[in-house]
Image (cartoon, rainbow, N blue to C red; front, top):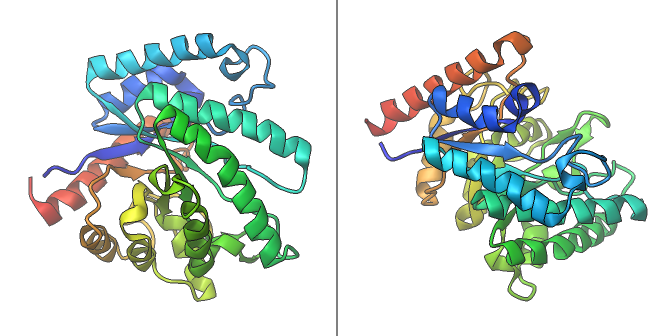
Length: 300
């Protein structure tokens, strides 16, 4: 089997630090990781934290991490950047643009192919035109950084908004695809603007008449370059291990085969669902589960 099993390391980074998180991922059987630069300290305004340093200092820090990953033989296949991107606050947007540049730079230093970022999410009172305009402004501002640092900026599929108890605007797959195509058609953006399928988000959106996670993958086609595999009960963004929710995983794997997906099979999971004391064990168990599922399907 030539499928690489990958896991998002955010929980491990927050508990054990960045270097140790990479080492743990290798020790528990991952072939690759999804390195997090999304939450909390990953902000140039956090004095004393790495994003507040100079570009040279940031480069030195992440080059050391990449060398360690190379030494132990684990791939840093993707990173997760901004999760609270543009909104109506221009001061917020300006700050997030600075952080987004750093996300792209760091992904390039780590050798990641993709840096995943969320789309805009502003609530049900926002018009379609407002969503389209702000999303276009955001991605068109960030894609040049992806181009500069040699990475893909991957926009992630949405689901429903638990805060507003309604379908997120970009949880509508038709709108998601329309928006992607409009932005990708500009300049040479298509080369550096791609998609990430979050199966859990798509599974939640099904309650509002949206396609299955597998059919969302089919709609994304060749523009899909990375994954956030996770499961849920359709009602909450539980980020469970594949097979612990309601997703039809055979159909998901069928869809990935049909589009010729050749990237890592990356899981983005809530590793602390049984408490912080078990996050390593939860990660290891999930890697074993996904490897078993793929081995059963594709052979060793």
